[in-house]
Image (cartoon, rainbow, N blue to C red; front, side, top):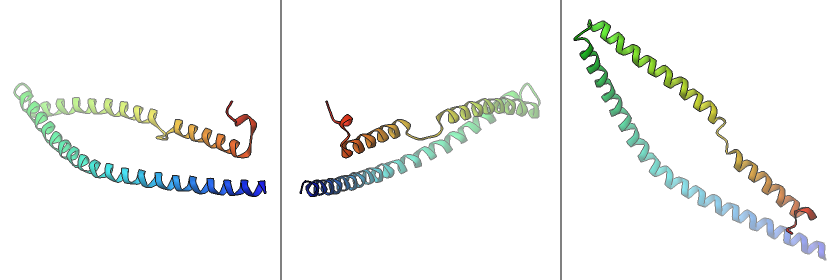
Length: 135
């Protein structure tokens, strides 16, 4: 009789946990849809800003070449500006790769450890492990 009651409690517990997980997933999905909608608009605005910024940067470079061409031949002025921009691009690229390598892999390591500990504690509690009981 006691074993049957424990089985009923375990089944009810499992069903309630399943319901809770399904509800949490629905809430998370709804939240992600809302964030994606606002994020989409943000991405469009950032793209417009990036394109305008690139055009503005190009005009600044053309202005620098025109300014330098007053004291140097046009081809040499363009070569000087291109060399400086290439150097800046190389330094930024090396630094950016270093930052990306330091951030990899993009896995929430602390959350995975916490989840594993919680699962172990739940398993111990269900198994009746006396060390897992609160003191």
